[in-house]
Length: 463
Image 1 (cartoon, rainbow, N blue to C red):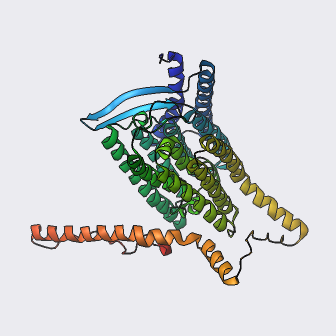
Image 2 (image 1 turned 90 degrees about the horizontal axis):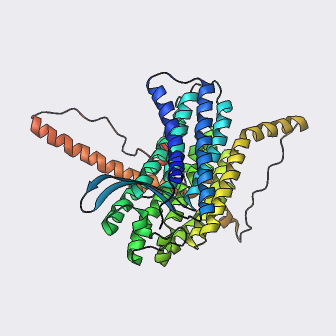
Image 3 (image 1 turned 90 degrees about the vertical axis):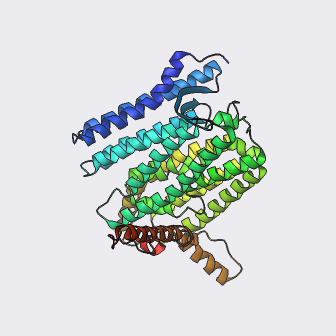
């Protein structure tokens, strides 16, 4: 394979450097307490987004003209611990990563222009755009990641910025609680991704996706591991994808994310962040070809999520929750397409759906205003829409299904009782054990740790 032209490599670097520069400018000015004025902040966002977008579009056009389907920028091993660990940073430009990067720049630029006016004179204007820059950098790094370590860096940046933006209106308790709940779900997702990285290093001695999936350009690549190995790594990556994309059983955090400002709801949970799990499954889709069992699990999970999201969305009473569950329904269908092996269809569905939901979320506040204006004009409330329930054989079954939808499938309660509470109790036991040990060593009573409620994280506390 002939080496790539230096100018193409330079353009690839610009795609990553543009959001990085924006993050540095906004972040450093905030740390030095020399916040930029609103106009300068908006202009900085515009320059960074346009620069990265143009570079990505030129890279895509150049690859089409040159007939190149795989361009890699390898920044080498940053940490090497023989024999099985190498922390490598690598960016890959192919038919999956470049469209995702272009989508990230396009929608983030749209949201940036909208937010600069929507949050005008808002107290947290600068804080929002710092987190926005963090999110954009994370999305670009995740989209172009050629190693699981690089992907994890972007994955964490997206998760951190998303959780902080859910808690953006921190003067109220509800956003802070919901932001914490989102962060708890993301922690489970991130732990699964870390375990997948450990498994990759154990199996292939490297975190490079090419070592796991082969060097054949996406989507024709084939996994270089056995069916059992593909199932192991694939299941860990599926848990990571489920947490990030709010698939079952992590679907409960999605409506809580609507506590954030409308611009963040649009670009994160309606368009980009909620699709990251599906993108990860597309990236490692050769594992599904190597393991029919894994493909079947992905298919069932996608279908179950789509059905549950449809049912729950049908009983929502506010427009942002309706849109969030409508978005989740489509994400479930996209995951189903991935399970069926329809990789290009899933990618096109993802790109189109992200654009649609962004525009719908941005239109939501104005739609409510128009709705109230129409009610005032006619002098009465508009008739409620009929819920699209399927006619069931008995009223009892219909009542049960309706309750299931109202309670969002009881997923939050299940996670709270069977996942969060056992962890908290285990750490409380460790705390008591540590206190007894320090009491023994010091010969007296040591200071007690801050009290932690024994049922912290239950559905009652987060509702």
